[in-house]
Length: 141
Image (cartoon, rainbow, N blue to C red):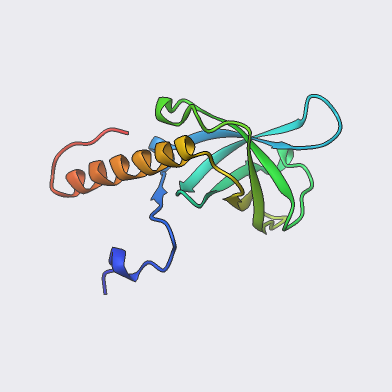
């Protein structure tokens, strides 16, 4: 049975990135020290509600579910330049000591109207491109 968009029970439509079109982000741990401790992350999927990221185990710094982290910025995607210094709540962590990466699920705590519009537009445009690709047209992310 094929899954449809209607089967999705998420509040916001999300886009999934693969190896070819992966988006890079910097996640920071807010603390009293300047500069904040930062970790490079690969964004696996994203929506107006939040994102899922993968961090190399050797670069991962201790965090707990419920912690607040900052999305410092997203690199290489001009449409998402406005997404910087956004507080996010850590919803879940998948940390298996035998894997090379730690996975994080985070929700945006606050977004300005402009940031929300930028995210909505980005997701909508990517989904439209993906649908065109399913119809046999070449797409490039």
